[in-house]
Amino acid sequence: MNIIILTPMEIEREKVLEALAKITNKKHTYEVIVSGIGRESTAKAMMQLPEHAVCVLMGFAAVVGKASHLPDYLQLGKPIEITHASLYGYEGGLFENGKPIINAPRLNLPCLSSLTSDKFVRTTDLAEKTVVNMEDYTFMYLKKPQDCIVRIISDFLPHETEIDFFEEVKGIDFLEGVMAVEEI
Image 1 (tube, rainbow, N blue to C red):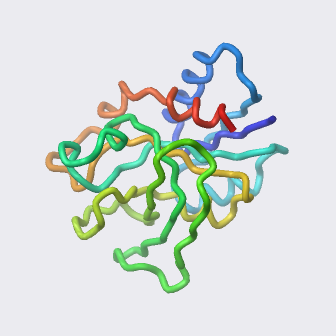
Image 2 (tube, helix red, strand yellow):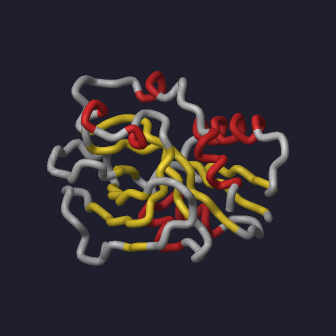
């Protein structure tokens, strides 16, 4: 089966390619495409995808909560599947037309809810274990039924200290997330 893995950033693409290189007997063929960050970039990329059987949006995501209070499956570098997505507006309010989208899980990963926002969310007024990103809602709105989202935990909100995102994610490996896709 031909699977496209769509990543918002080049660093995520590199991590997917590194993970794929570690798998010796792949069941599927893969193409890894960078969509760019944000809702508009995701939509444009999805409208131009080559022929494929499944598309997986895979990338980093922040999760609300302190690492010390979250379960093992929500620690740095752990993959989760997004099965519920909502859209936050510019001022942090839910858009009227941003009704939540809910899908059944496709992978053998923990499932979480996701908030997509047009700007980085800094509020503490979000439920613990909520994933925050800039692409999931658009992907969920445009995807085919067999497509899915895998997010890799990259940081925790709210940040207690200022972080250098690219330093934080250097040591994160996408192998566990890619292996979940390999089992489709």
